[in-house]
Length: 279
Image (cartoon, rainbow, N blue to C red; front, side, top):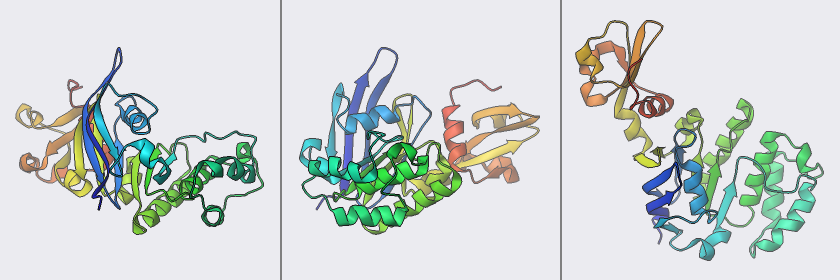
């Protein structure tokens, strides 16, 4: 029995001005992992390496216990925009895509389309942004995918469409599916993710339980702050007369009531700003 559906160990990819540096993390079966970090931090490079779209400089990737070419039909992919011909209708899309999957289920495909309220007669170019994402989800769910890899699927979606997608992901978890969900909209992850992997400048800063991460820090906002307290703050800056940042939970006592539970977005922002000078 496979405990982890995705295992990445020591992944490196070198470019002239950027490198992935020993990226390692794993996704347990039946869980949702949020993959977060600034644009350019290495999320898409990591995902493309997992999907065989890039050749890593070094490292090992195991998907469902094996190599991608052994399990690719068991992996569903949803990118930030459709990779289908815009002039296709949904019906012609099925005719074009289904032969590539030995276990394609037309019944599952049309059930998903109905559940997601996706028209089968419209051209892909005429679908809304949210409907295009749902269409990609329908395809991913129609060939028995056990692992879904989502790269910024909620980018550009309106709040209602995002809410619908989060509900879909929650239902997938109930059915035992696993999801790697790359997004910069961290509020979505607070609702649905079990685990969080945070990448910064090509390196993994944290990978583990979401609740543990949220409990590890306190957000602080204070008008008058001493230099001693400033030294405890991560990613601190002064804005509109208030000094704000984040402190490790075990060091937050001196801040008193000014230290509160952070959001995931605050953790990402303050940790991304950690190396900057106070402003």
